[in-house]
Structure formats: structure tokens, C-alpha cells
Image (tube, rainbow, N blue to C red; front, side, top):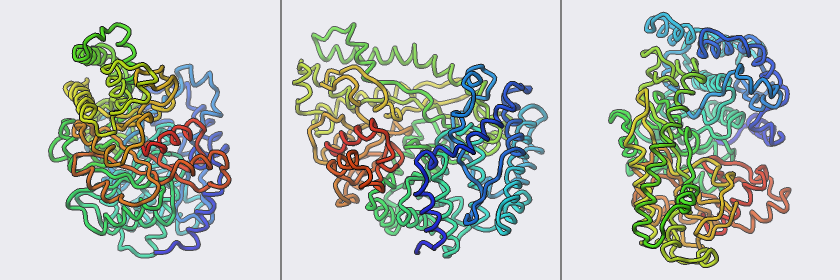
Length: 629
């Protein structure tokens, strides 16, 4: 299908916006959000849950509905920069609502089945009287009013859809898309513009609404353009049981035609994946936008079993944010709740360690990691979980999440059916290479040049990385937190591999250079063939890390993408994404951004235009590209 003139116009308008208006909002929207929030700050309700519900009610009556004359869907998500206009002293005085964690997939399928009236009936009939019931009803009524008020400025056909959605479930593809988009905006309002509010299995819950008509394709394109507002890490998952339908094909084709950074597209691959679905996914990948990310469905399902997700739920998963797998619609996943730097812990241990015998040194290092986890990380995790329940309880998110209406508890207090708590470890590759340098007793310059680093398919570093990762994964998965929350390990810490200032490490990495990204090698690896890198990474126990074990390769072109994905997944790898650009192009884009305004790259788990990134991110991606990672 071809892009219509209306979609081309909307796409051109998006591309013409200043960078800070693409994701982080406009001044007008930010100032308005700040004023509304300030008007309810310092007026405590009976609970934080009720305070947030009352804020939603005030917001729904006070915000300015905005609909462009060419819009096909109502609603804008451009208030993300509100903190710039909010008094700093009020942010710190403890009276302002706290942003919630975000990183969630709500039950969009339930929303589409029941509609607003059906949800209201469930709350009224299934919940006992009390704060939770009152807050859930207040939040849902605020959402209904939010939807209704968009009819004030919308074109007549869109205004009619808005009014109908307050009275009944959606009947058409356009109505269903509109309800999903309104839900997305309102979740960000409630979370004070929280991040990684993800769409989950889009093709599964929306596929029944479309017959693939040109009109539906145009509406889908309009929806995807809307997703380039307000959240740079919202994920949309395609494939798996019940997916790979006509809508999945439409999404992949539209993203290829539009070449958008958002939403982040994730595809579930398995031996049962259809030829048509695979072909569409690789066609999009060949575009060079960093889309889609590929996930190994059988491995992710096994990893969710290790995270103690019930067997009947492990096959119904979507990706939250960057790479974190979560059961669809009924899981409070808290996917980036806790992070730790493995290189920092190694440096801490070196201050007290005896290095005369490597095997004993390595065994004692693992004991140091275990002690740190049990005595320092676990108490912080319990404190953070208590803070979530006390300060961040979110009534609208909770009523949209499976289990919370039945239990009468918000998600942050354990109300959802499934409950996870993300624990991220950063810098595995850097630590493995550092251990190799310590074993060989090399000085920094020698370690910087040494052979056999992780990613070179060296049997020693492959085994060492697998052993260390397995130790960490099993350590985290062995415990449980209050409220039935399961600690869930991941091998990344979003952005911190670049942003965090780390001292020099024994592998020869100098102070403030980036540490290794995801489960991959460090940038000091001598350029290695992609197959060697993937062989090293495939040695890791990916089934222990449903919360993310990301791998990214930088290639000069789209040749052999299919073979690399299939080969890596056959060896047990869980995730793979690509940047299709050479280092010389990135160097030129840094020096002459005007020549590469449309260059798209994968940044951790989401895509962005390279010239819009700050210099620190650009330099880190350039370093990786020189080694093919």
C-alpha cells in the first residue's frame, strides 16, 4: 500500500518539528501541565492513590484539547517537558505527586472488549467499598471526560468517535486505534510523563478489527506518526501465537514506508513463524532504521518460566521499553527498578583481594558479588518497592491491568496477577575482559591490546562469561520480595554504559570510556567477524534473563541479516538488533550533520535520528561501530 497525501503531509509536519518537540513536548503543553499539577499539589487526599485520581480528574477538566485540521486521530502527547516550567522547590518539598515507574503493558485487549462502560461496571460490581474502588472509579470517569472533551475541537467525524467511545466498546479499526491512543496519553498523564508505556501484542488485540483496507492502512499510519510524540521507548510487539496476522504485515510495511523512530518494533521469531512475516520483518530491517528488534520466542518463553511466571502465561508476552519481556496485560513488571555496575564492583573487590591465585580470586569475587547483592541490593530493592506502593500508586494504570480490580489493590501494591522487579547488571563484557587481563597479569597497555577478549569466540572468555552470567542470574532468581514480586535479572542498565563515569578497569579501558553494552563485548575488542561475536554471546544462559540480554551488531549493509538472526537464535541467543551504517558515515554525520539529517540509528532499545543525539551518545556509537558492535 502507498502512503496517502494526508499521511505524507502529517509525516512532513513531524519531520519539520524541532527536536525538543518530537519527543519531549511543546512549551505550551508543558506550561499547561505544570499549572494543572501545581493546582493540586499540596492538597493531600485520603491516600496517594486518591491524590493521583483527583489530579486526573482536575486534568481532564482543565487541559486544552488539541486537534489539527489534518488529523485522523484525536489527542496529543506533548507535555513531557513540564518539569522545565514547574518550580524546583515544589518538586523537592514532598507535596508534589511522584512520577510512577512506567515500563508497563496494560491490558489493551480488555479495554477494547469492555470499553469504558464495561470497565466501570466491573469496578462497581467486583470491588469492595474503600479508597481503591473510589480512586479507580474517579480515574476511569476522568478518562471518560478526557475522551469526551476531545470532541470539543475535533472534526465532526472524530468528535462522533470520541463521544461514542464513552458509551460503548469500539466497533471499527479507527475507533479501536483511537481508544488505544487515548489510553496511551492518559497513562503518561497519570505517570507524570513516565517512560516505556508499551503497546504489547498490538497485532493480537487489534488484528480482529481490520480487513486490511486502504482506509485502515491510512489510520494505522496516522497512529504510528502519533507515537513519535511523548515517549521515546514505547514498544510494540508483533508475532507469536495469535499474531503474525494481516495487521502485523501492515505495521511492518507502514514502518518501512514512514521510516519512523517510534514506536520501537519488536518481532517474535520461532520455527513456526511464517515466511511472509519473516520477509516483512527483514525488509524493514534492511531500511537501516534500527527497526525491528528480533526476539527468540522459545528462549523468551523459557526465561519467563525461570522468572516464575505461570506456565499458562509464558507464551503471551510483549516487550516493555527496550528489551524486557513481560506477560501481556496483567504484569506489574517494574523492569528497570534496580541497576548495578559490575565493573565498579570488580574495582571495589580489587582493593581487598589477593590476586596471587586466579581461581581462588575468581571464586572470592563471586562471593563478593553475592554478599553485595544480599546485604546491599536486596534491602534497597525492598525500600524501592515500599516507595512504589506508598508514593506511586496509580489508579488508572491499575484498573487497566489484569488482576487489580479483582484484588482491590493497585499494581504498585501487588494487585496485578503477575509481579516482577527488574534487576539490571551492566558491563559483563568489560568485567570478563578484566578478569582475563588479571589472569594473564597484564599491564593496562598490554591488556588493551590483548587477544582473546569476549566476543572473539575464545573458549576461555566464552566459558567465563557464561559462568559469571549464570551465577548472577540464578542468584537473583532464587529470591522473592514482599508482595510476591519476583526479582528478575537483566544484562543491561539503560544508558549507564555511556552516561556513568567509571574508573579505568584492568582490561585497559581508560577512565570515563564506555563499558560494554548489554550482553555484548567491549569496544576494545579487535574487530571481529559477526559470527565470532554471536558465538561468544550464544554461550550465555539467555534463559535466565527475561528482563533483557541485548545484543546489537553494526554492519555496513543488510547482507546476511537472516542468516545471522537464524544462526544466533539456533544457538540459544535471545535478542538481536542491527545498525546498518559504517563508521565513516557516522564520523561525517558528527562533523556535517546537515548532510545526514535523516540518518537513523538504534540507541539501546529504541531508534533515533543520529544528528539529534548529544555528542556523548554519538561518540559511543562511533566507538562501537568501529568494532562491529
